[in-house]
Image 1: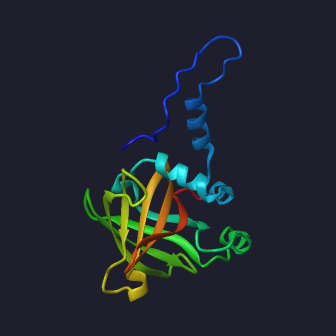
Image 2: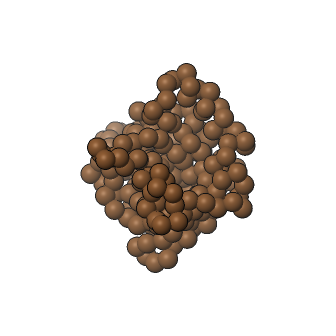
Image 3: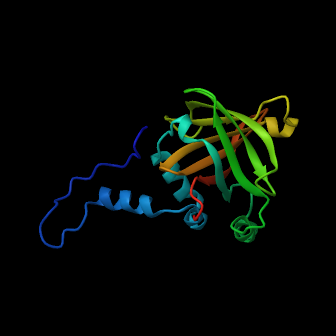
Length: 192
């Protein structure tokens, strides 16, 4: 599994009052980050985290992951501030995603809506080039016969911030191109 990437910083270590190097502080901050902490970040901060994240192994994405919608690009700041509170509440209909690897290079999954028992909108997973930059991501492909036409146009992708915490981007494929619509987070931890 690829490690989280950070810019290397040559800083003196040891000595009185020097503290941890900046790269160590960044690793420590990521280790303390929880899913609900991502709700407080703006789109630029989420984008930077996404680019610096790593590609998880498909077998690491296994079981039920709790989800949060983190940012919606097509909404005004005022509307998003209201929706953000709703997205962080237990009343938000999207509960997360469930994953099941079917091999080392592919898998499948579903979205959990309204409860952990209602599983809809299936997808297939694989690792492939990200739409966000020159790196790979886990691709979630909804273009399956079971899904309605408007869901089949969704292309999600996921990268790992740290073990158990994932950041995703949802794209909408339209005739004139593919557009980033929102950011979402997933965690395998129950207390985030």
